[in-house]
Image (cartoon, rainbow, N blue to C red; front, side, top):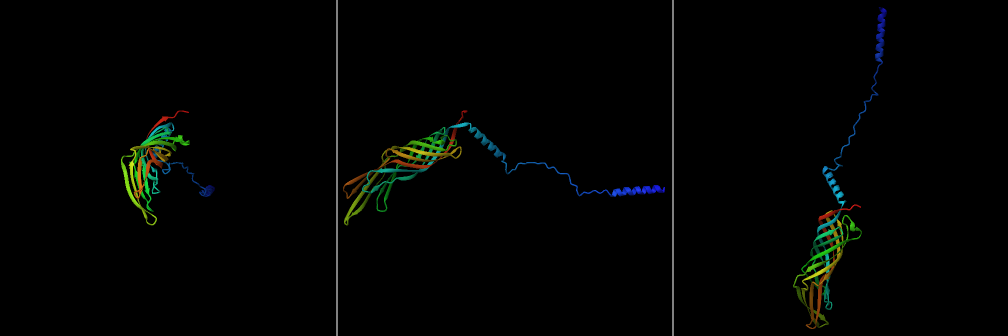
Length: 301
């Protein structure tokens, strides 16, 4: 019995010693890795709105459609503004007493036009561009200036032809050779007159009395103007076009005429005439709005 108790005690001590040797070291323990799912979301600041996407798709579709079409005819309204010079012709300066200056004045037009295949254009409308007649009388350092003009308006008819390498340009940019004629209603009757008297000293005791009388009238009720020019045009958008022009004008018939009578001391009389027909130059800028178009389907190559 004594031996059994000793054996049991040794067994208990052995189990207790083994239990004390089991040590759990958590120093090297690491949790399992966390797997994160990659999610790509749209950046609202970098992506267009649905409305913008719809608008872009519509524009793309329109461009794709237009690429299959060729522009055949267009109709437009336009406005021009610029400067125009017109001179007159003096037959006799009356010993340097009379001269005539070339005047440069502002002008403008309102036009209607038609274009065929972006190559030919015809336009007409209303133009405000008076024909002027100038008389300048020498008077020491302060000359006397008289200016007369006709009714002030005209009806142009103009034809244009696209020229140069840009004549087939899709955006309308290019040069145009222009030519045409104007119908000019000048009005009727007398437009003005004056009577001048002056004195001129010759030598120490000789003083001459000078008299100058003028009558200016409309010479012809209706005259014309021929023109030739160069235009440059470029499309700002599908509906708006900007242009610049330089034109030369030739008068067809005299519109205004001045008759001057000059006498010295009621003696011999000299006469002179001045006529104006609208010949001169014009430069300016134009703006055209296209309100109608017609297309044809392009032929397959």
